[in-house]
Image (tube, rainbow, N blue to C red; front, side, top):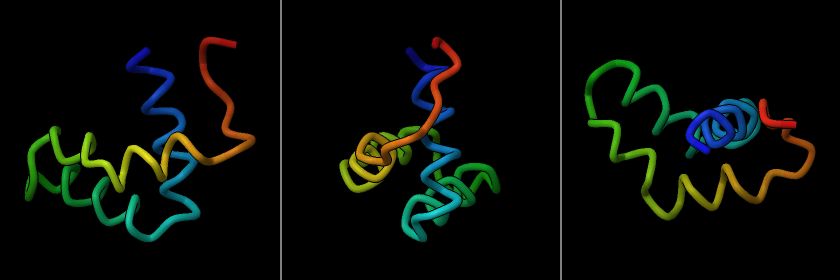
Length: 56
């Protein structure tokens, strides 16, 4: 489930500036990984249609 979320998160980050910002802040060690569970980031990643999961 974690891998599927990360796949969707990367897809969303390419299209949603708020998701990109959250992902870059975590990658740059500015914020902790829990920042990727913020409701704005979750919704951005989960609402993106067409994102391919690694589980399919």
